[in-house]
Amino acid sequence: MSTDYARSSDEWTRAELLARIVTESQRHYADYSLFNQALADHVGLHPTDMQCVALLDMEPEPVSTGDIARLTGLTSGSATRLVDRLVKAGIVERHADPNDRRRSLVALAPAARDRIGAAWETPGRAFGAVLASYSDTELAVIADYLHRAAEVGRAQAKRLTSGDSG
Image (cartoon, rainbow, N blue to C red; front, side):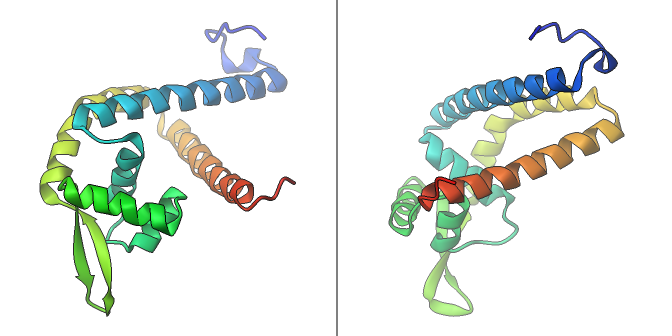
């Protein structure tokens, strides 16, 4: 397939568009993995820790270690070790669960949120500039695709980790 992406969308066959999306998705994943590694290195974290921080940043309330395991796909033991590392590094804080004193909840430490937010400032502007070139209708399609693709990714990760090969 040609990589001449300058053609208008009506000059592509459906098969070419689908192949382009697959290729660009693979490139995006690889490039985003490199970006995540570079950002993690920049703020002094492991890439898995960085992903956990990003997920915690999206959560409206503190979460349990079990929730972190679910969000990251880690085992409960690995999630506990991850939280221990992040607490020791001052990235997250543990708080007693007001509804269950036997359980603790995890939230980003305010100073860490500020430090990581500052590291995201320049990349965030760059990603924002890309999105600014799209119409509201196109942005709605992009958001819908990302949401649906994430759901498929989570379902397939669950399938693969459960040992289901079908």
